[in-house]
Amino acid sequence: PDRHYHNTVVERGFHLFGDFPHWEFSSVEDFDGELVILQKGLFMNRPVQSLHGLLPEPRSETGAMILYWSTGPGVSILDPKFDSETVKVPFDVNADVPIAKFTTCEFTQTNDVPWQPHPRVDGWKIRPLAEPTGDGGRVAMIHIPTDWQPPAELVLEGQAGREWLFVVSGDLEVDVSGGDADDTQALTEWSYLDWQQPASLVFPTRSASQAGCVALYCGEGPIGG
Image (tube, rainbow, N blue to C red; front, side, top):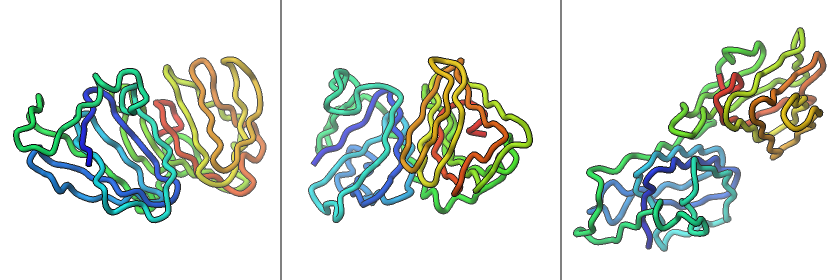
């Protein structure tokens, strides 16, 4: 059994496949916790000082794969700052915890979030998932339909800090302009692309996707709404 929280780091995750049992605890006195089964399409947005962990049973039936990211080091036992960032909370009502109240993790089944028109790009759709917090950017799912192309070259300027795309399904062809290189990226399912200012994404007047694309985006640029 284990339960812990993080002092300063925000954790986020998108479940790709399988099942992963996880527990959320509301207080020091809460020994049983609330069981959450992470499944395909679930988005996790964990703020700082959220008490969570693992219990021996039940175990995953299939194994799982999760796309996981955080705003800083120290959340993994392999990180050099683990001992200062991650605070273990023993299963003891008298455990000494230096915070008044734990925060609550947000879980969103993305398939239940309705698509809406993208506010900046005609023809795209968007599922907003999380607003920027601390060093963590905005998170959204983006849908680009089959054979979409802009009426004129579309340039989505890079913002300060890192932006990234993960192709959940489908395909996407996009030019990366500026930064370290100027080249065309042909992305397919589970491709990952990140960029930083001054790099931008450029969509020329050609088809950007042969079969349509659903991508997960994180950052503070125009792609995220």
